[in-house]
Amino acid sequence: HLIPSPRQSGLHVEFVSTWDLDEVERRVAAGKGRVKMICMESPTNPQMRVSDVRGLARVARANGAYLLVDNSIMSPLLSQPLELGADIVVHSATKFMAGHSDVMAGIAASNNADVVQQLAFVQNAEGAGLAPFDSWLVLRGLKTMALRVKAAQANALEVYEFLCNHPSVVGVNYLRPPGMHAIQVDAATEHEKRSHGNANWEAEARLHFSQARGGGALLSFEMPTAKASEAVVRNAALFKNTVSFGSTSSLIEIPAKMSHASIPVEQQTMSPALIRLSIGIENAADLIQDLAQAISLAVVENKELQRTVSQSFPLGESLPPRNAHAVGVSMPTWDDVIAYEEGDVQVHSKLTSGYPRFVFLHAVKQLFAKAEELFAEPGETAMVFASARVALRFQQYLDTPGTQCHDLAAHGAFAVTFPKEQFDKAKKFWQHTGEIPSSRLAAAILEVIDLTCYENKRKPVVGGPQQQQQQQ
Image (cartoon, rainbow, N blue to C red; front, side, top):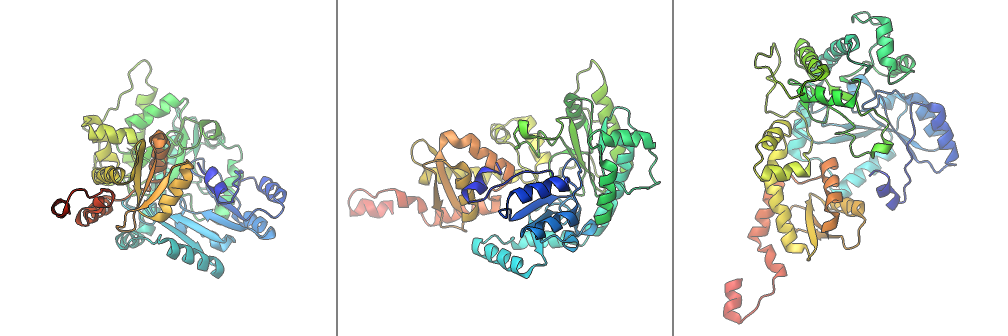
């Protein structure tokens, strides 16, 4: 859904393999001065491809364009793209900066005064500043970021060694320091596993460590089939099956079905058998044992593959595998929301253990119903967003006649009404962006509506003076 929305704003987006510098140069030259920004991520998520930041900065400058780098995977501790020539660097502060999967935030940084001034103006004009408590949570996380990144990266190296040596794993993607002898992996075996997804992995590893100080805590690997990979994820106990990364807790997912599911299948470049791991700060031996038992169950032939959690699982220094605390900021599917509301026990267990923000949904659902009551015409439904910016972006995304924004006159929130037949498309916006009011905001808006008798604005007053006074 990235392509249509910018076009409506007069922008054109093209996708290019940024790790192929020659291809980027050809595409920029073909643009004949129309290219205004090159956006990149290095290493890429989840295939860990490496792009030349210095080279891309040179191409951007030579053609009057900005270079923007998403540095979320590395964090400022392991990579500082501004020093390599980037104009703008963005971070998902949800990840390593906050580090506890309890806040959604983003950071944009630049050493160009004009860019900073423009960003500040837009942020002020749109009211898109981070809330005080969320800011406090990010500041709290920054105090321990160095310790967490160091511990998670050390764990990732041990997990990488285990996966390279496992006979059932066909491919592994991770950036370890070249010439490092601390891990025990046969060179031929490592080359076979790393070349499965990227034949140029050695050159890219050398490039990476010329512009970064570590491999980070994100890695991916492949099983022989998508079915086997799904079984690995299903049988993991200490790893939590959710999106996001950079948390104290270790997470596991299949990108083609979760974090990257919004990309049409025919446009996906990753294998459906690719598993992404975000390594946390638990005991490395516990993480390896959990992966070992999950992989063993996945490769057992002629047996029903069911989730099996041993009650005697050795926890060592790790958190309990059934820890109900925040394990990943992600959004449940709409079908799960409905099943939860209908009392489905299995869905209730799934959501309360894997979706820390799910607790807000009851108040939000009430707010959606109230907005529909207030504004929707027959055949329409409504969704509520925390700001005019998000509401307008949602309206632009739907691109459907009859879609209208309505000011709730409460805490800056806006409702958007749209035809009910567009509901499935609307759900995808909510699910993949996470742009939905918090429970606190939803409750506060409902309170304002109740106190101001807001609903009376649409209800005509009938009858004589006495009846009118009673209705008021």
